[in-house]
Image (cartoon, rainbow, N blue to C red; front, side):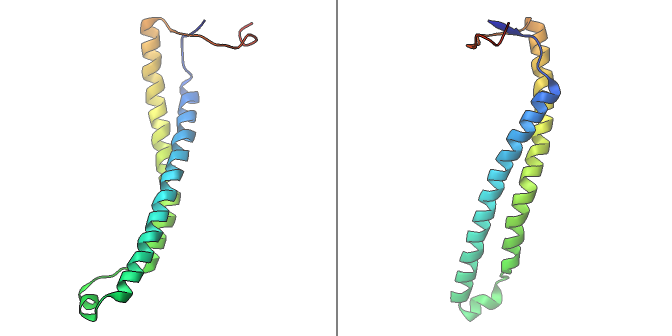
Length: 116
């Protein structure tokens, strides 16, 4: 058994940054895919709409869907990474306070050469 008495604040914040940045990239790619599907459906439905409906609607151009998709792939990972960094800092600080109050955390490690 080993005892964890402290967690590196910057180490955990960096880990959360990478983790949440990757999650933001996945969500951004999904949003991009959905905006491309919506752009295609909007164009298809617009071509089949009647002239009376078309004059009353405010159809957006396909460029708006493209900008939304590209923006999601760029913005989501950045926003998630920044929030992950802040969340990692807060988590590490709270965890260190809890570890200090309870005297550490015991972990069982199954690696014979790790703790010599």
